[in-house]
Length: 238
Ligand code: CA
Image 1 (cartoon, rainbow, N blue to C red):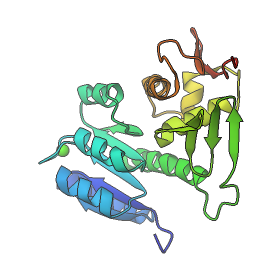
Image 2 (image 1 turned 30 degrees about the vertical axis):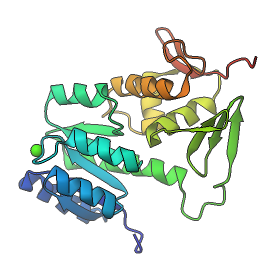
Image 3 (image 1 turned 60 degrees about the horizontal axis):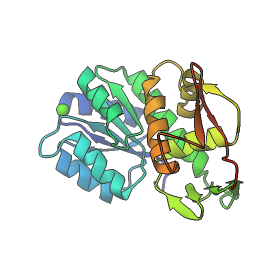
């Protein structure tokens, strides 16, 4: 990181895939660290301070789901899961893993690089280098978005949000009352137009509600506009 390069940790047991990813990311100017099994991957995720992790699912010793869960206990580093099968996609989206994104195999290197840039760009927006706006706090009734610490507090209590959840909440809250379609949110918050799956938006909204709302089945902040999409509204104060 001293030389300004972003470090990407690639946890993938298929050497041919790992090699081609390493080759291409190195060419793109990333510092690439590799691990070939889940245990080593987890160890490097916690010791090498990667800026982003590419995480395969079927891995020796510890699978990608478990690695993802364990990394998330300690770190909010962006994680892109590499999935091979439709069942894995469903699991990535359905489980409360805390992954930020996924990409299905086989994928092209251009798509992978675009996805990595999109996920890194978000971290840069939240932690711009030498940022002077780091102490900016925005209040929405009982909610506080602390942009510097990338923290959301509800009645003064910090909520444990992932980067993506934070970004989605920030996007909607700053445009209070405006309704956005899933496609719009995917483009605006996830930052790419063609690769994403709109289910990703629904899953992220669901996770966010579970953390944010008193009763996630009766949300007061992130509301659904039936047939259209989602919007933010601060609840009436009692
Ligand atoms: Ca594998």
